[in-house]
Image: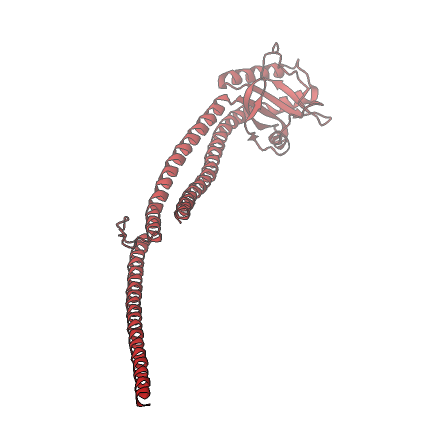
Length: 335
């Protein structure tokens, strides 16, 4: 019996701990999912804001450069591909000046050639640089297509735009933008493009990502601690009721149930109902005890009466036997 009660206690403790652990685990999972989603939203919004800010800034520079280019002379460069044309060197020097002033990594112009290929026309870079592209150099190669959706849209529709941030092995993180070039008739004759370094932007994104992750982690830890404390405060009075139940199961009906919550809520109502149940159970058991005691007393009296009746019957039987013997003796005397 004692072993059964001990096993029962251990089982109940295990179940109570399991409820607490399960509730905390589920809270952690829910908070982790919510925190991850919230963090991604914040980082993506921040990245989109940076992209918009940097893109509009570079696009504004390119639109200024495009407005400064003589579209008719530039169209002649595209048709002839003559780097001896005075305007070629003039435009190249202008692009170099703008690039050095704005801090752009690359500044160049592109156009469609007669055969439909996309080619670099004027490269705002020094001719002695390894990455300098002579006039007419194809933008796309057999191994790589460099034209982006923004490039094609600017060349065909005259819509300026910018790309997303992208990583390169040689130049690190870059950010590209394009603006159309028009001739005097309003025809699109090419685009001016720029590649801007985005390592600073990447550092800013990494920094805000770290900050968001740290804040979410700290908030996650704080909320988890609060939830664990809340769950413990809810389970504490329930565990107390379990202890009272164990006392009652051991036959102790004199246990005094005290409401440890000190508040008017569902737990308090459980305490009150449990206390009434104990009192009613004790009353019923006491009633049964009294009834059994009276029954035992009545049974004892019956046994005593039965014994007395048995003794009286034996006395009467002895008297009858004695009378019979006396009558027999008198009969003999009369004979």
